[in-house]
Image (cartoon, rainbow, N blue to C red):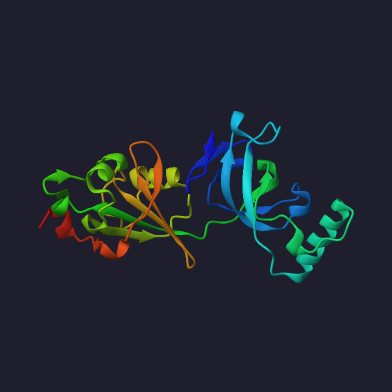
Length: 226
């Protein structure tokens, strides 16, 4: 299985890893120890590119800002290649790692929840609320963000979509008054550098283009359809 869409996860014996997740190379990572990066792809089973028994996790590592870490990495790779290597010559942008080599960094993303307003749930009498992404795109070509309201904006301490789904169905945050998270709802995971929008589909989540500037804001009147 090939996982390459933001938010797709795999549960390993070393923890849950997600495409888009920030990680750091740990003490098992050899030359990559201490380097931070982001998971870009995960491969399992017959789709693996290596002979490892565990999953293949593809990581794009960042060039470190710490000059001492740069020196150490250069020295480690120079010893490994048996010739001098500078940080610019070291492969960092596409590295296949095993799960035991990686440690997840603390989640820094906050969550916004968008849900279709019951008062404008149709377009030309075609229902949109609770419909899956394939149906919506077949009817309108794109996700009609103007039907949605921003209903909540919070730090829930996780960026895993399945855990967010659980929280907004079972363990609602204080002050949340929207509906239980369901099909057609949109999750925004954001920090100071980026935003990613995930559509809650009939099975799993899909990364989507979503213009949140077109959304309204939820009020009690919205819920009552007034």
